[in-house]
Amino acid sequence: MTYKESLDYLTSLGRFGIKLGLERTEALLHKLGDPQDLFQGVHVAGTNGKGSVCAMVASVLQASGYRVGLMPKPHLVSYTERIQVDQRPIAEDDFAALLTELQPAINKVAAELGPPTEFEILTSAALYYFARAGIDLLVCEVGLGGRLDSTNVLDLGVSVITNIALDHTQYLGSTLEAIAAEKAGILKPDSIAITGPQPPALAVIEAAAETQHIPLLRLGQEIELAATDKEWAGVQATVRTPAGTYRDLRIPLLGLHQADNAALAVAAIDALRSRGWEISDAALRDGLARTRWPGRLEFLDRNPIVLVDGAHNPAGLQRSLATVRKLAKDRPLVIVFGAMKDKDLSGMLAQLRAVGAPVIFSAIGWHRAAAPADLAAQFGAPAETAQSSGEALDRARRRASSNGIVLVCGSLYLVGEVIATTRARHARGSPVSAR
Image 1 (cartoon, rainbow, N blue to C red):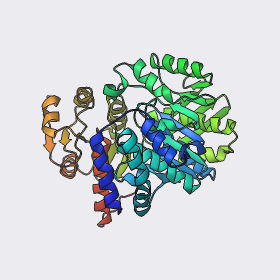
Image 2 (cartoon, rainbow, N blue to C red):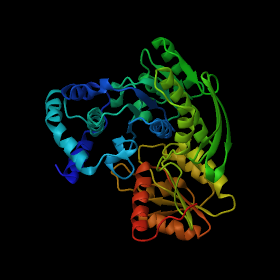
Image 3 (cartoon, rainbow, N blue to C red):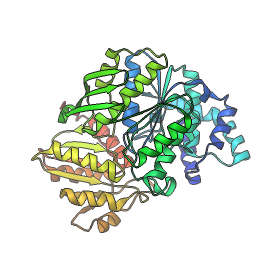
Image 4 (cartoon, helix red, strand yellow):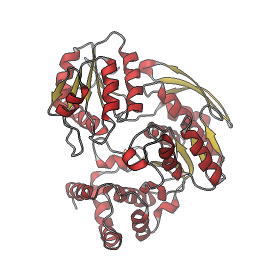
């Protein structure tokens, strides 16, 4: 297959929807030689922040000289982002060749157990690719939940659960405790667990760790954190774990909430050290300071400043809006918002209303996206609508004026479209100025 043909093939599997369970992934991987059994590393679940933790851990491991496989979810611009070695996405030709090679095994599994989903195939393809690429360590972000997520075929030795909030309730349950139980499904015997939730979710994770007879390090207890918001420079954090104290760590990602993610990442690095991996304090500092995580309060442009953030549930959006309001100070703020129909729209729209900034509701080129007119009607306050993300961004930039801030938020699919549009515009001769 060509790259375009491989994408057409993958997206055609979207019609099978989300099918929770491991049987198809396990069967496919078994036909590929069980590559999932080869890896050690860090497996990260949680409602918000799990991608940031993955990015920090991968950056530290790479600074230590290791060859690192990274499996982030979802992609922003290209499917190739989901399979990364040393934070470089797989080449398009290699991606197409990989799916071509896997097709006979996929067809056999489809005949035996029903068609694998897009996500199950991507998980299996990534692990098969990493086995041949000879990575040293794997950092994997859970897609949905944990217990029945296809990445749960992995037993990497270190498990992180960032936090628990209401999201994907149609699949994971309608209470924090039910969602925590699904996330805690990634905990394995003979591993080390690290977590950041508050009660009542915390008690569920504590019970799961006790059932597995594994140590559990909890943010705010075994992991202590003191942090300073450096605004546009990111955050500075001092983290104490049972293994030591790490003072004045610099994290370039925006928002004080990234200090929580950094503390969990530091604890994960300590856990890997306890399992025999050599990672110096200098590599820890350097890796954290070099962390990049696109689409999460990422600076895209100036005059006006454009920030994008894939906050797609009320808890994540609350953090993002608080950070942006602090950064904006007296600058005009304009928000571009779009979201999927199955998200907690009422919760997110209530937060947007509370900010009091102008809102432009944008269409998104994705079949599950909510219509801008429907969002505007639910918003219940004056708002604009746009039929494309490009139109929404152009209008927001004009409305914010050169000294303002535009925040694009609500869906990673919307963020990905805006990133692609902005990159294309810069490639035509308008490079981003340094902040």
